[in-house]
Amino acid sequence: MKYNIHTLHNGLRVVLVPMLDAKTATVVVMAGTGSRYETKEENGLAHFLEHMFFKGTKNRPSARLISEELDAIGSVYNAFTAKDRTAYYAKVSSKYLDTALDVISDIFLNSTLPGKEITKERGAIIQEIDMYEDMPMRIIDNVFDELIFGGDHPLGRTILGPKDNIRTFMRKDFANYLKHHYTPENTVVCVAGAISEQKVLDAINRSFGKVAKSPAPRFVPFASMQVSPRVAIKEKKTDQTQLMLGVPSYPYAHKDEYVLEVLATILGGGMSSRLFLEVREKRGLAYSVHASVEKYPDTGYLAVQAGVEHGKLEKAITTILAEFRKIKNVKVSDEELKKAKAHIKGTLAMALETSDAVAAQAATSLISLGKIRTMEDITRGIDKVKASDVFRVAKDLLRTEGLNLAIIGPHLDREKFLSLLRA
Image (cartoon, rainbow, N blue to C red; front, side, top):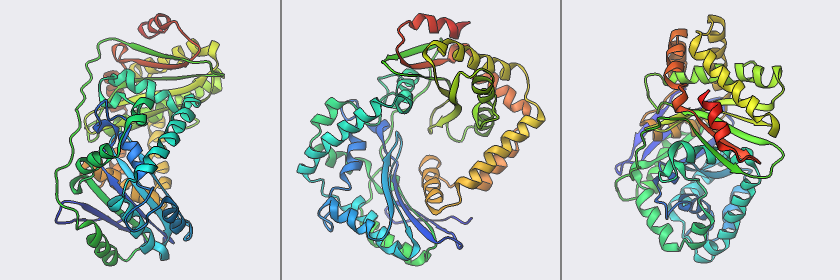
């Protein structure tokens, strides 16, 4: 797959990815900003602003006009806010690409942030917060992030922010954030699919080329100083206990980044992974258990998540810890290593079949790394991983003093769980 990168005079980057056999095209506009760029008082503002972009522009004065135009062409469209990026996208039949590009460009560049809509949207966002509060599986990472990064660091705060903040944001707060965080230098426009490259580039230049050059925002860096295991419990009446158990790990572009991916896959990637077999198949402790890696430019973590019966929480924790000890004390076999590599490459190939996935991956890669990391790049990195590398990285990361355990459920005895981690 060919990625053609262009940089406009104001520093904005454009990625065009022609996919000759595609029937669709996707427009993604991504800004390198999110909740980790907020102060404590601003927490939730980036996500709230994302909502406001759909409430009206100079050319399309209402949310209804925006949605009707995209619905009329059968578009799949939305936006999302993460800790380090915010994106707006539309996927369409390729014959409607001009419309999709025009609408997404318009909401990104010309949103009017109407005051009456801010007032109304407060209620919607507070309901969104309440909705996730009723879904422990979706917010266990909030508890974990605050534990591993600390509540005083932006990475330790939630993306949606506290309700008190949502109730107080004014139009001037949005306008100020927009001015300082949505700058050409930290914005990427990616269009992938069945496209006419020059036509698309000309259209992007006409709209985004008008934006004045200004510096990209900076984030507060994070360095883990953890010296002992930690436990955080969100006491809540639930039918099932959610847990997340993990350790600080590596940032983007770390020399062992691909080794970490293989390690996570061996532990909890797929239904034949070690944790799935031990936690679910052998002991019936959970319906779902998996391991994942979270990465930022300066830090990251490896974590295992599972939902278990309240009375079997301790057994689930000790089972996961036993797998941590096993993988850092005994080298993985060549067969298991080969399977993990094939799993990663196979899921990646399937994930990048569609224009929306390709566009999102390219934009994220450019925002996070400053370059496009292609499927071929990732495949080469995975292929180089050796069993000795997995052994070395497991020993480096899966240390008792680095353990972090987050729990949501009807539990109170923090010391009991700390003793399990120290054992």
